[in-house]
Length: 365
Image (cartoon, rainbow, N blue to C red):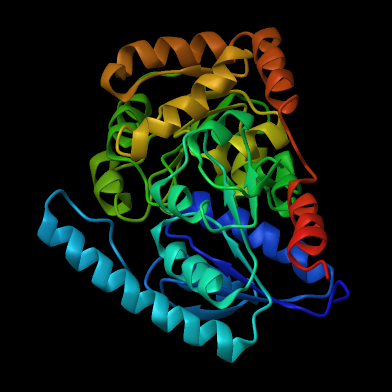
């Protein structure tokens, strides 16, 4: 089958760390002429963002990983079997020739359905420690795509393994510093700390950012609260102090990054890939609420090369953080070195490499 005449299904999502790299891979596949459809959960992020980016979206029934106990595991097996059967029907109806699983529990039914139909599947894992869905699906995949070489030790199966990095949307590189600062009402020349807790926000990060916003500072603050926290934070700050720009949800992150000198954020793989692509220094607060503490593994990798400082959430203190931020922002040489170290990890061709491998491995005849 020639490249460019296939229907390829992206499967998975749930969080920005899965969805946005998936869309970057999907756009690279579309650039090769493929028809790309997205199978995921309608009520989660992919159900909104994929159609906005022009991808044909189809809902797959949600499943949840089982809690301890025989009863919950039996129920999980039943729900997974039902969801896989529905995914089989979708793959047949859409005449899908290849599946690319992008992480998140919702990908499992589609990848398992593909395996049962003889449709070749690849999976992409962007974290150092793979999630449960990818551990399961690696056993039936033909191709495993990784952001970190060390991840391979956690996966079983006979699939071909390629280290490709975590794809970044090329639009992320298009931000303009002057226009971004004007949009947020920030000074053209001052130092700016960007605080962002992920697409949904993070309560503990917001707590310390509130303290920074109220304190006397020698830097400005671009504070993205997450949509669920915005009203609460705005009320707590009323009136919003000078030198603070408050945003609930930002779908133009290229501008937020462009306006910033230092980023305080979680350590999800897609965020770290964006920081690397942009050469931005960071203070990383790994989420403690993720499988196998994989965000700390991600963060320590950047810390080890001098691109970031890691602050565990259990050790996050507003006064100490204020001192650390002030010290870093007042030392351009340190910030420059951190940014250069971050950029050394960038893989700007990740999405194109994934598309090339889908063509050459999954679609080869």
